[in-house]
Length: 218
Length: 218
DNA sequence: GTAGAGAAACCTACCATCCGGTAGCTTATG
DNA sequence: CATAAGCTACCGGATGGTAGGTTTCTCTAC
Image 1 (tube, rainbow over the protein chains, first blue to last red):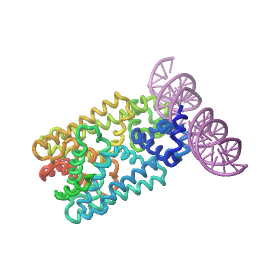
Image 2 (cartoon, rainbow over the protein chains, first blue to last red):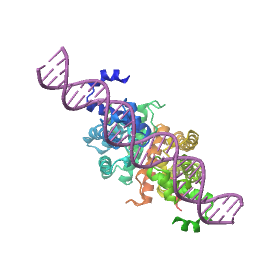
Image 3 (cartoon, each protein chain N blue to C red):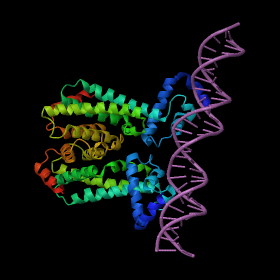
Image 4 (spheres, helix red, strand yellow):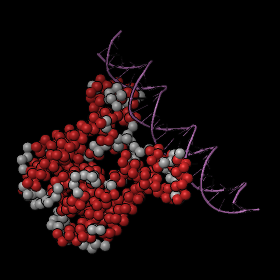
């Protein structure tokens, strides 16, 4: 029965593309059910292969998780860090970071954010890599807050605590935001950015808000 | 080998007390490793019994989780909601809620906060109970923010979004705060409360800050 | 064009291990 | 002797992973 379909479809699938497809499906399932609760059979079934057949393309469950996490961090690098790297003013940069990250979580379905918390399931080597990339991102935000502190714009709080607090707000979005929820997406994003920025800044300038909001319009 | 020790100790342990001990140990392990990753053998070993022997006191793995979650929610009711219920001024109440909850997470080891996110592992009936209790707490915070909005003290943001944002900040503490960390506990608590309150309030009054800080001194 | 070799794709069947949970026996207590 | 406490030994099932075979595609040789 699957034969017929595959005979037509297979030729246009290169090995690499098929592996990518498996990653995609695995990400969807693991994000929904969590790493431990997802079995290789679940993934194989969803991808239309046997478990053994799937192992022809991938290397194992843990490696699957590592690939998904790496991809998620690529997204952060590409869609959050890169577009804000050139912003000179720390206040504008902070606002852009929050807005891009929160927006990304809301658009792409933030489930992967929760998967990123399951680093304990990785091998020590892989865990070190992922934690390193997370730390890099953390340091960018903390450094921005330190610059704001130097400029006298930060509240009288420890920049490290403030950074953790920000990440808490942002990462938690994936636990409550639903695209089909009552509140409009852009309202949530606007309000959320306001909350995040105002939590750490003494007196946020309105001009900065307007600039970045325009920047993110597509 | 265990015989010897147990022969002495057992008499002073009533059945109920021993069950409590199992709950305690189970909570510690499950908080550290997560629900799925914790096996009944792990718990039994840590408690000094066989898996089968342990089943003489408890009813099953899921029931164990439910008990732990219920206990955690009891803590919230007792140490966060109850002491702030009588606070009339919404701004003071908000500050007290944040301070008590954050302080509790930092003292008692916030790991249980993370366990509380694993409601998917509960039976539907148990899940409904725990989610109901969580929702009650959520509504208390949201209602407080609504009162602040009526008083014109809330920022121009949706109270629901603001509530979720606050819970994100608070619940995330358990993921980064370490009692043996570099920053002093009371500094973290003070800064964190400041961040949380200022995130939602237009112009927090300093008097309120001082009052509550005095209130929480023990 | 086609026969056939070799490789890639993929499946069936199975492995050892662990899971939560239980039956039934033995031991200690009172 | 009765009861509670706690053990050994096991259950059925699910797990991640693999060995080895079968099918299908692709490329070459003639």
